Image 1 (cartoon, rainbow, N blue to C red):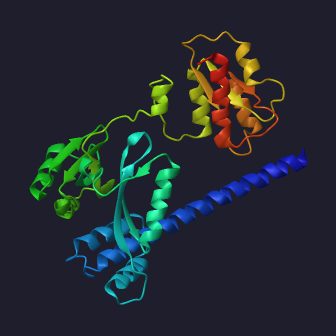
Image 2 (tube, rainbow, N blue to C red):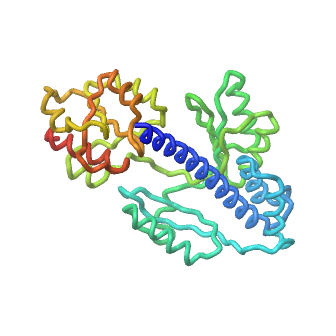
Image 3 (cartoon, helix red, strand yellow):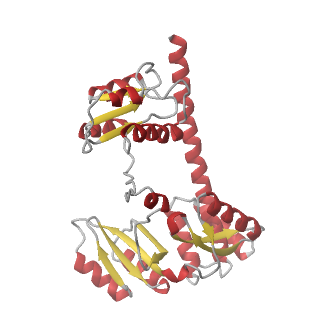
Length: 329
């Protein structure tokens, strides 16, 4: 037992270290991405006061806390003061899963390689790379500025400031204001709002769709279940376990369960069509004993998926398939 506990502890330390390494890797990738954008923009001039594209790129870099030294170096590469790789912009259009229209803007030092990679990504996830113009007509380029709604912000004053600077429209949501501009007016409106003391949650020039719809996958139509699964925000294990109280039946896959299978568990209960069923699968390494105890405390029933231990990404679909088979869904 001591050896098992030590192995579990070591595994968890390894997981934390792995997560930190991934976070550092993502941060470095973001720095690289924005440095390239600055370099390309700086080809039009190294002074952001006279180069709106460069000004915008620098603001985005500062938004992710990129060091000033990195920004200056990227600008110098663009103006030719320092040697560096040559980047060019590009755009791809196509259709994703369920026919969703996709527009991709890229910055690359090898357009042939990037084209191949983009096509592979479309093919891998059930989409198809299209020809230029096949979906871009469905989008409009707009400057988008998002400001958090607080008690300190007067909506009329905000609208007046934005309108005077050249705003096209303002949409009010429960928790934020979304200000839309023409791409060429984006920086003027953003500067006016910053000068008036407003802080942005997000700001960028984006592709806004002319229409939106919930995608209906052909497989959903074929099986006559017109339901697209909803994905909730991430939550910690305590909140997730507390939410299980809302369900009539709670099933969780547990590697220490050696007797009860999903079939055994479902056949031992009288299940009505209105019952809500929650299925819980654990992380790599499975649930801890404390987590299993807490799930059982809210009515959870542990089940086994068999002798073979499945990975997290396959355990869930496998368990769902077993439940659907037993309940003839």
